Amino acid sequence: MMTSGIDLKYLTISQANQALNAGDYTSHDLTQIHLDAMAAERNLNSFITETPHRALAMAEASDKRRSKGESIGPLDGIPLAIKDLFCTEEILSTAASRALDGFIPSYESTVTNNLWNAGAVLLGKTNMDEFAMGSANVTSYYGNCINPWKASSGNLVGRDLVPGGSSGGSAAAVAARLALGATGTDTGGSIRQPSSFCGVVGLKPTYGRCSRWGIIAFASSLDQAGPITRSVRDAALMLAEMAGFDSKDSTSANLPVPNYVESLDGNIKGLRIGIPSEYKLGSMPDEIEDIWEQGRNWLLDAGAEVVDISLPHTKYALPSYYIIAPAEASSNLARYDGIRYGLRVEGEDLIDTYEKTRAAGFGDEVKRRIMIGTYVLSAGYYDAYYLQAQKVRTQITNDFNSVWKQCDAILTPTTPSAAFAIGDKMEDPIAMYLNDIFTVPASMAGLPAISIPAALNKEGLPLGLHVIGPAFTEQMVLRIAEVIEAAAEFTASPNINNIAAG
Image: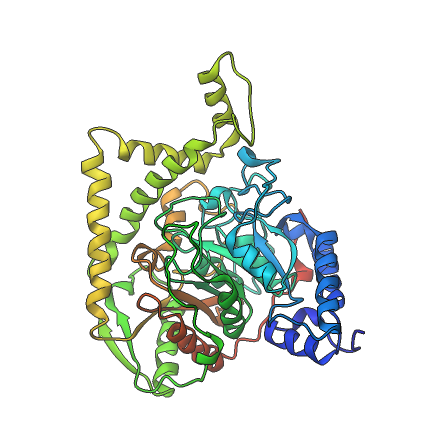
């Protein structure tokens, strides 16, 4: 029975689990209030597919387990949203592309299967940039998602803002209190950047920590699943269930999954936190520099040591990423030919069918990246572009390996700005790509990194801080992040009642 006076949408996963265990309310109560919130905020367009019947059935199964004393963990009965890049059995899975409109898998991704085995409840599949290619959630075939935050002053007042991308729907859903948590994927920043724009926590684990099996591929050497939540503790709870070795993924790390929550003891005394000089951009707004300095002081106050470091190849990370990722995308997306599944546009012959299907199925940004990728892999250009980019990637990884001798973790801003208006930067792909300038280096090196909401800017929009650690140090990264979270005391919520319609 639901306890009166509690707005269940504002609970964290940890709080909701405690209250479910105490019998204060049921998973059915918790799930229904989130389904109602989803219906009330459809103008955010944060979901591509809603699954209310599946959600309530899963919630009722959870309630039966609890009534028998058979609860199976901290996610049992917790309603979550799933990025539409994860294949879900018998549920539409589109990667936000017309090419997969109507595709209903007969199998479940490993990560989502892990979550269902932990008792989590599926609310629906969230909007995203098409095939995860974008930083604003404006390339979706199903229309752009709207950030639930609105500017309180400045020239953005009254304008709808981007939620970031590619996991914009997941970040918007968590920020707008439509889900207690959500899955995202991060190739060059697609969990951390939208989490910063939407004022929530976003964790990209080490490459290989979460299985990629059943996740629709963008760039296979970079893609990594992770959680988007409203607290660092919730991120730890979700990662513990999402992670694990999977023999179906050849890049999956055969390592035990630690108890991430147990590591959240608040003790970072003696840890050395690196501040990379290369992240201090001349074009960066003062408010980004200020919150970065504030984050440095919070860590000092908690007993950490702050050291200046250098990552000299940082300036090459973005250009090399935008060679390697499109190259892998051009290969991965070759499978969408209209023959076996997805969209099919009949042509006069087989080649014509291929061409018409792909022309109709892919949006402009996906086509742009496929063309870039095909170009850099073509004869005569492979050595000049792709091979050189791979060498730069090695140097970026070596930079990080060198600084771990000087520091235990790194602190940077998450993004070079707060959220911007929908429609801005659309005509300038380079300006859009620059949104990932702080997140791409960790992706190129396969390192764990987390974005934590730290402050509001002068326009009332969230700004995030970004912690990077060595491979498979998620426990330490989460511990540092929770110290920042406690110091920041970020309790602001978006005023979703002011969202413009349409």
